[in-house]
Length: 258
Image (cartoon, rainbow, N blue to C red; front, top):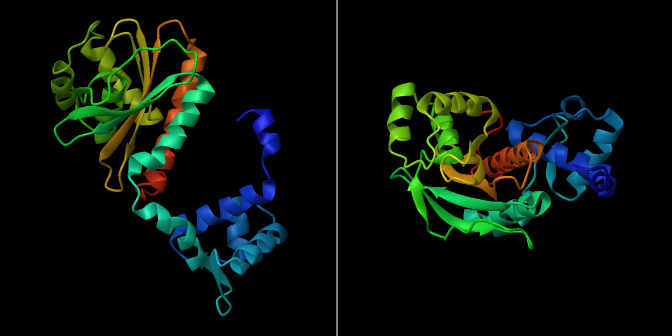
C-alpha cells in the first residue's frame, strides 16, 4: 500500500474492521482487554470502538460475562451476498489488481476433471496483452497455476510428475525445476512460469481453496515477456496471494492460517 492510499484511510474504521474480523474468526465471545491485546489497540480505544459497534448492533455485549460477540446487525450486510455467484464477488478484487499493476488477470475455475477453465479476465486500458478466449481449458498442472495446485493438494513427487507429464509445454522447464517450484509454492502460495507453458508469456499465479482445502479458483497474471521486471512480477504475486486469502475467508469461510 503506497503512502497516498494510506493517507486516505481512517484509523478508527480500520480498527473497527480489525475488531470485527477478530470476533468473527475467534468463534468465541471475548472481553475488551483480550480484544485490545490481540488487536494491538490500547484498552480505551478498543472499548470506545466496541461500544459503538454494539450500539450499531454489529456486535452483541453480554453484561453478565462482560464479553463481546458478532451481532445480528452483521446479517444486514451479509444476507445480500449469500446467494451471489462466488465469481461475482471476486471480480472487483481482481479488477483492482489488474488496474493497480497494469497486468491482465485471468480467473480460472478448477474442475473435478483436473482441468482449469477460464471464466473471466480483467484488462487495464492501453496495455498490449495476450488474448486468451473465455472457456479455454488447460490441464490443471499447467503453468504457474499447476505448480500452485500441486502444492495446495500436498501431492508427492510421483503424483506431481504424472500431472506434469500430461501438460503440453512449449518450452519444457524439466520436472526437477517444476518440482522445486512446487516446494516454493507450498511456502509462498504463489508460482511463476517464465515462457515455459507459452513462449513469450510471463505467468504469475495463486489459487483459492474452499473450507475443505480443495482448490476452487486459480488467479493468474499473464503478460508479454519484458513488459514487467522481476520486482514488479513479485509484487503481482503478493497481491494475488493476498486476494486468494481474502477469497478463502470471505467466500468460502476458510479459517486463517490453514
